[in-house]
Amino acid sequence: MELNYNITRLITAKSSEVAKYTPMQLKEAILKSEGRVIMGQTYLNNPILINGCTSTELMFAFGGDMVMLNGFHFENPKEANGMQGLSLKELKALVSQKPVGIYMGCPKADDEELALDPKKVEMRSMMYSKENAFKAKELGASFIVLGGNPGSGTSIYDVIRATKEARETLGEDMLIFAGKWEDGIVEKVLGDSLAEYDAKAVIKELIDSGADVIDLPAPGSRHGITVEMIRELTEYTHRYKPGTLVMCFLDSNVEIADQDTIRQIAILMKQTGADIHAIGDGGFGGGTWPENIYQLAITMKGKAYTWAKMATPLR
Image (cartoon, rainbow, N blue to C red; front, side, top):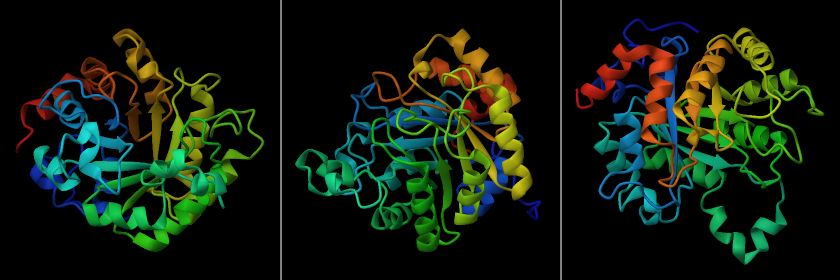
């Protein structure tokens, strides 16, 4: 990956700089941050935590560098609780064009149940499809994240299929995250030594299909996942195609544990060598508690970088 020396690393870049970045320049800004980028996640269908303030704004205010929206309604985005009547472009304007992306669960191939079950019709407007990928671009998403919702039965091979189609549809006009860090009952997550597939072979397929970022579970939050497992896969990803990034995901509802637990897991996450450290959307307000994303931020990048982002959101 040839570096552009005009691109500032994301952890120190001002919002006015980030707003001008192309998807591939955003990727470079993350790479240059050397494993200190923090991503918050908010589930838009949950009740809001504070009236008149979105969870997206809270996460940036408490040290986040990126925010991922889960449960985004492509048909009626403004109707979700967490959007508080805003369009995606309006939400991004409120946070000075900082990186805000959309999570999409990937449907199983030829999923007749999803197509026919009236109870699941609404899910289609929140899941991956070629049409929704294109809408994400048109609506102004900074990135998309492809995975499998808990209990959905999504296979990693469904994610590979979606990744390939999304890249063919969007070209380099979108930063694409892909992987499997949850829903490990029917098929184990990436990094689980009990998985019946070869994790490195899967990562190779994801990258060859067009993934810019590989998503892996965080040690200490997902049962049975160790630093050594994720470190090995992270190193493989970085070596197979230099410039490809890794996101380490703290979830399993541990994101709403106490701050000391978050601090301990953050130290484990840092040891994996991942480029982005995400924290899940568990919590009554559709996201982790503000103090937990703050704890993750100061553990990963220290108080100086965290406070500077908190103090200069409009620059």
